[in-house]
Each structure stands twice: as C-alpha cells, then as structure tokens.
Length: 395
Image (cartoon, rainbow, N blue to C red):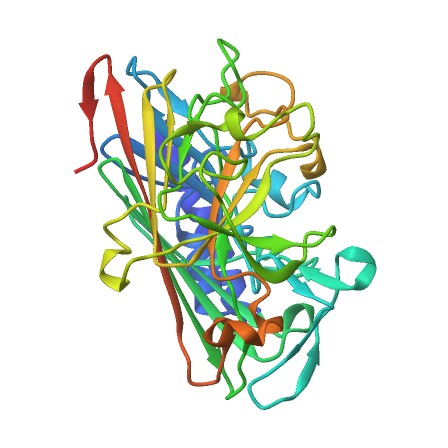
C-alpha cells in the first residue's frame, strides 16, 4: 500500500512538471514539482541529531527538530503546520523566511546608485516613507524554485524581475545543508542585464530552545544570550529608522550581552516592553579568518539542555523577540495549544549594516551592488545538548 501511494504521488509530481514545461515555465519549476515533500507539503533534510523542514514560499524554515536533554525530540522554531498555510498567512510575512531584496528599513524608499541616479522603491512602512524588509511582496512573500534536494541539502532559487520597484533582474540562490548537529546556510546573488541595485539579505528564524512546550515556561525570558562580538549597536529614531549613529553597549547596561551569558529577562523588562525586544547590533569581527571560528551569538536553555552557537560572515545582528506587533500566531500541533505568547521566541537575524544606502558616512557599507558584483554570505547554527551531564556536541 505504501508503495502504491508513493507511485501515485510521483505521478502527480511528474504531471505537474510536464505541465510547467508545456506552459513555458523554467526547468527549475519542473524540478520543484518533482522533488518529494512530506505529508505536510514540506521538504525535509536531516543528519545525525538534527532534522529540518522547509516550504518553498519564502524559502521558509517551518520545523527544526533536536533531541533535548531527556532524548525527546522537540521542535524549536516557530512555524505553520502545513506548507499551504504560508501563502494564506499575512500576520508575519517573514516567518522564518528569506528577507530580501533588502533587510530592514530603506528610508524614504529612495536611494542613489553608484552613478548618482536616484531610484524610488515601493513603500510599505511609516505611512509611505520607507520600504521595510523588501516591500509588501519581497522575497519572503515569493515562491522559490527547488532545483536540488538531497537527504541533507536543499537549494532554493529565485528570479527577481524588478519586484517592488527595485531595479534590475537579480538571481538569488540559497543552499541549506545539515551535518551532525549543525545547519549551514550559503547565499549567492547575481545581478543580470548589466543593472545593479541595493542588496541586503537575511533569514529570520524565531527560536525557542524549549520547544514552546506547555510543561514549563513557554517564553525565552529564561534563555541565556551571549553576544561576544557586540559591543556596539545601531541607533534608531522613534520610528525604528537607523540614524547612522553607533551606540555603546556599556558593561552592566540594558543592551550589554558581550561580557558573558545573561538571561534575556535581565536586559528586558516585560512590563515596560509591551511589544518585543528589537535591536540591531554591530558584529566586530577581529579579521576575516575568524568569522567561521568565533560565534556571533550563543543562545542556551538550562531546561532543554540545548545550546545554539551562531556563526556568520555578515556584520550586523538583528535581535528580535516575538511580540504583539508580529500578530497572533497559532502554535504548531507539536508545540501545544493556543498562540505564541509575548517573548515566546527570539530571532538572531544576520545581515549587513541597516539602511546602508542612505549613510554615505559609512563609506563601504552602502550595500549597493553593481552589474558585475556577486553577493555572497554565510551563516551556521551549531547545536550542543547536555544529556544529563554528558554533552552531545556537533562534529
């Protein structure tokens, strides 16, 4: 019976592939239809100690399973139960998906390119004065193609034909690969037709290392956070727009996570922060060779025994706890009942310096790419689990 069901599913995918080609679609569209998905319509990759599931809408991560201190598999990220729900949900269009073409704010929706020509991008924030996270239909609201999928790796490809008013045609590729207790992400973006433009990618993933279970605290306030490279953060105005100022995170003050691990609630008073913690930190890499060796962030939970180290070659880290402004989100069936609570998860979103196109005083931080430039970025999540006194590390 199982073999029959598998044959039927493959026949349906093959028919969809043939239909895509018949209608003049790209071969990537055909391949996307061919690769198998699970019963929830998701693409799964796995290695020892780790299992991930994705949907091609926004190239979003929907599940990340790790065995906790008791050996019980828990799902430690926010998400939706079925892939079809991602196209129907508007409360948070960037739920664990790719943020692009430009992460964060692009102030006034206008920027000046390398030749001094001004461009206007579609606004979706601050009463039409700014573009946020790539616009209303940015890369997090785009169906990506899947030209390759294996047991431990998946490749997403997106063709951006001047979406949301951004100039040029950009081809974005994202590869996710898992190794024992590790998840690696590689970005590559190429402009076509001799026309460049602004580019600043990120992947926003909301983590709760306890899996949001109902057996204990379902917020991240007791998680410990260490940002060893973040002695500075980016100043913003009352609307959240970067001012161009770099602010000191002085030891012992509200935004100081660099001196050692601290419980998140130590630097966040939930009674006076009704929406979320929302700050972008500068990453002070010592030099290029250390970017894959020194973690930019370390998140841990004593309750689950899980520690997550975050590595990246990007130079900014947006730290964001789930808040009321993100909208109501139902817990996945595997995580319990009800909605995700205030501070129910935390995102450690790697990106370049925010709104760099509008800050020429940052010189090489303008986040503008010419027609011959190739954008690439790297990040990795490495997990360790304390199995009742015995640490299970990634290899």
